[in-house]
Length: 192
Image 1 (cartoon, rainbow, N blue to C red):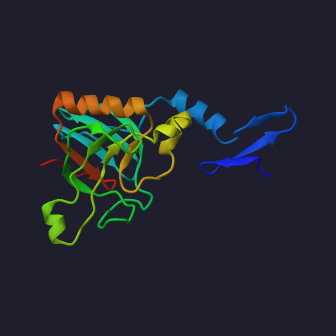
Image 2: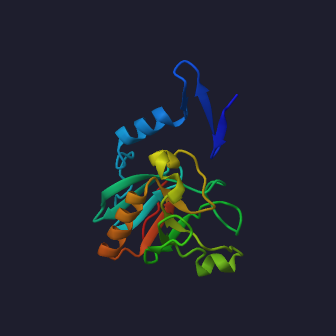
């Protein structure tokens, strides 16, 4: 029997040592911390001059400049998967979008970088929704480390694994005046 449950994690009383151990995350957090935040697979920046690129299948994000990756991150996407078309579907949009200026989130995610979804051509096709962007994990989850990217949990946004990561991304977007994000379904899309 679990002693208590927190964020869906069962916490058991370990009788041999008389201690309470959150069995799920002790090894997971240690592994995530050892793996490092920039150790995401491949380089999704080939042929891209300047953009944030997100592969929704592999759950990787790259900061691209001059055709190569400045930095890569593991991400979580919408709990409904990719291909957002309407408000409330919990999906992450696919395509090329304008990227707004980073700002404080106001919803407990530290920093929010808006994605201009839906585009005008998508609105004409009936797509709706909004409040889509790149942000960090909930500030109350910071003890979980980068394990917050292991499961897709957002309402359609892209979440990185730590507050430090979203601060670094926001600084890079501001400094390099990045205005475009590419959300891929697992194959190449090129910037316009």
